[in-house]
Picture (cartoon, rainbow, N blue to C red):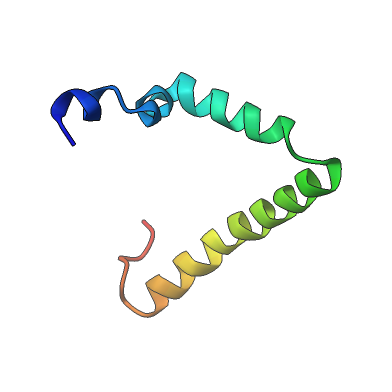
Amino acid sequence: MTQEEFDNHPAWKDANFEGAERTMLRTGMGMTLIEKLQWLEEAETFSLQFPINRRRAIAEGRLPPQG
C-alpha cells in the first residue's frame, strides 16, 4: 500500500470524534429496538464490573489502595 492509498483510505473519515459519532449513529439507525435494549443491558453489565474489578485488583496488590 502506498502512502497516498494509506492517506486516502475510507476508514480515516471515521478516525476522529465526528466520524466516530457518525458511525455510531449509522449503526444505531440499523438496529432494532430489541437490539438496542440488548446493547444497553450489555453496556450496563460491563460498566458495573469496573468497581468490582478495581477492588479485586487492589486486594491482589496489582493497584495501589485508593487514597
